[in-house]
Length: 441
View 1: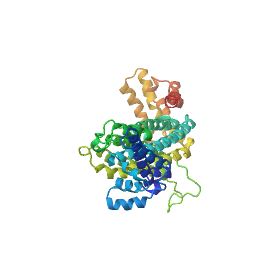
View 2: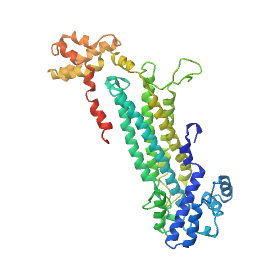
View 3: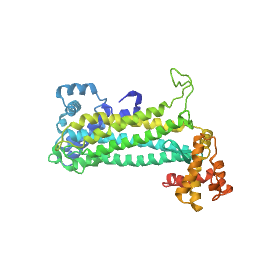
View 4: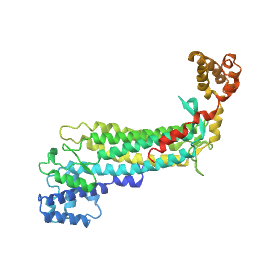
């Protein structure tokens, strides 16, 4: 976790204090359930629950727990030792029949669920910004590019609508991944429930808002975690996709949109004129980090037999780092979209830059409809288009076509004029926007 790329609410989820409090909840709820079924004395279970309600732990003394762990070399035992000192003789029933993974895995599920809930809020804010800007520029014409080369007209609103649809899918993926990873395992050593019956797990799961794991070994199966972190990686890739679009549009030769440049901001230590896309470049880098955590999560799936701890050190890194980094990245992208400076006049200028080449397909299709073969039609349009290309847009494709007798023998001048109508390319924008924004209304 790097403080520069961290936000307090997400960071707090991964604090030692939060982790220990979740451990305490698991132990208390388990004891409470054991008292209900007569596994431990009901009066002792009531004392443990009462101690929880009174918050007898108070402020979590992390250094004290760490000091105990330095001797025991076991984090769960260290915590139980410290917490037990806050109780009376009833402390002997804490952790009855349970194994460390019951606590560790269930607590991790709670933390991942908490983190996912924050990320879903982040996505909702991003979606709100994307929708607002998409509607603002619904009919702002701009050039669509394939391979980085001018293709045919689109609108800037369509670019943002595409991003909205992508992040809406990401939200759905994250909800599924959150629900899938939010499972509880209180099944004892090797997962047989021999010393802690399933009713205990069911009670703890209900109290924590989790689902009982259908069949655990000594751990919750790590395919759930692999899918969770893979989903975070997909979201990061979508962040990078939009960030790269902004970076390309901000290039001096394009300059159709740019990141907001605040008063007093500096772009370069050497060149005072610079306005660099530093936020979206940063997002590209952060996306690489989040994606990199998907692979170790997948490698954690293959554990030895009913349990080993090769996954443990991995998850101590990737749990906090992936969620904290993605939380920061989503908030940063939302700010970029919200404040993005858009230049419609430059978009129109770039549309017009190549002498009408963007309308070449319409002419091709019209020639085929007028009776020429596709091959001959393509050759006629291309030979004129290449002249425009070689002139760097100084020549007009429409003018050259009107001067080509093989073209005008099939398409008179007024028909050619109609083929260069920009509005033709935008006639289905309403339909696309309806598909994106109205399907859930």
